[in-house]
Image 1 (cartoon, rainbow, N blue to C red):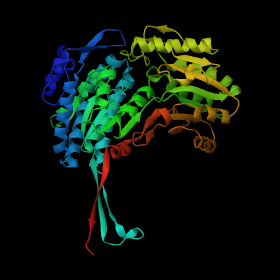
Image 2: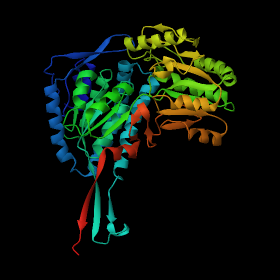
Image 3: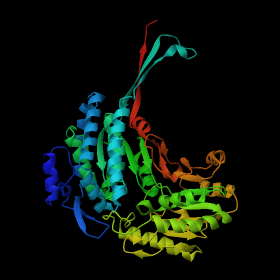
Image 4: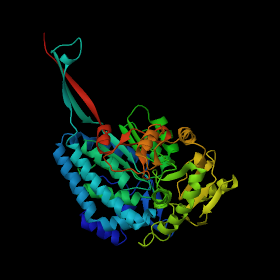
Amino acid sequence: MAYNNYFSEIADGKSPATYNYFDGEKWTVSLSGKTIDVVSPIDGKVMGKIQEVSHSEIDQAIDRAKEAQLSWKSIPMIKRAKILHLAADWIRQHEHYLTTTLIREIGKPFSEAKDEILRSADMIDYFANEGLHVTGEELSGEVFPGYDQTKMAIVERVPLGTVLAIAPFNYPVNLAVSKIAPALIMGNAVVFKPPSQGGISGLHLAQIFYQAGLPKGLIVIVTGRGEDTGNYLCVHQGIDMVTFTGSSQVGKSIAEEIGMIPILFECGGNNPAIVLPDADLQFTATEIVKGAFSFAGQRCTAIKYVLGMSSTIDELLPLVVVKTKEIMKMGDPREEKFNMGPVISDSSAQTIEKRILKAKADGAKVVVGGKRDGRYIEPTILDMVKSSMEIIQTETFGPVVSFIRINSVDEAVKIIRESNYGLQASVFTSDEGAGIKLAQIVDVGTVQINSKPQRGPDHFPFLGIKGSGSGVQGIRYTLEAMSRLKPIVLNKPQ
């Protein structure tokens, strides 16, 4: 199907997104006969359907991918890179359509949706460029005690095979690209499981890669519910690596099931911010608001709780309230004047509301917000929160930030250390030396000094510890994770 015709059919309401996995040749209807409605969180209307793929079709899809990978790994990397660069250009060419689709499908505000699309294109280019520099090496045996010049190793870097890429609803394009692009440039095939909510955007993304010239069958798209389709994929014998972004609970269950194959997981964050007494509180308040409430708090890098001395919080909290009212404008995200829309589903909204009410019942004070209208939940600020409360112990994937009053910095460090999560933390202070010293003992993957938690720049290492993930992401780190070293040892006769 020509690419322009593809988008014409979408505009005419005949989108192939209502069909089954795509192998670069044709769209088909699943043998299961089952579909999943993609309901826009903005207005509750069905905007499309995705297929629930049968297990037998998954088997066929993986076989197809493995067959395609055998020839793909032999294609020179420079040619692979050209295909990826063209895919990035196609994303930019159709940015507006992809942005508006993303807004409707997951309720992401316009500016954030557009940024996700354009950032995804930039990420593909960066992966393609950096892949050209990930090479093997030659090693001589003479440098190790007890050996001589009779041994030499040619250490190649080779693909893993077939990579299962599972993307989340909150960044269905960007966090799909962060898995698909490095897998492809390193010579792997990809089995792509998009989220149910975000699946239409995922299908469009796959179409773009094929339009750029990807060989047929190299990416296969498998749509369906996580508890069935996702589980079957994770334990499939044809999968050589699993890369996953999602909740800590799901990530842990996958890790326990898949056996001895490589994994690259990004899971829940539940990120704290420590505010020291010497911090610039105006600046800190702005960072807390943006960090807590962007995309309605549905980000693994969102700030979930703030730790500070009572005197600091007494001064900081009114500023956060003012900044929340100034910065956050809740409403229909299709209108650019609003920068905060709904949460993804009714069930998510109900869970968030219950957590707020539970915290209030346990003694927390609702300073701002706390009200729910369908999927729309006001930016909510809680004070007098204790570290033992459910709102702190379990990641609340919504627009809620809690303030915990501490007696010492050591108490803050202890609260973070005892958490089941360990993605990022923020330290706000005017003394960078003190910030670095504190960062060195805070038990998380990354510490941001004087900034909200964030994933980028994308060539920085990005990782979680404890329940927040496994493995290291970031352009070069992901490329290395999606390949392996293969030494070939030459032995000269003596």
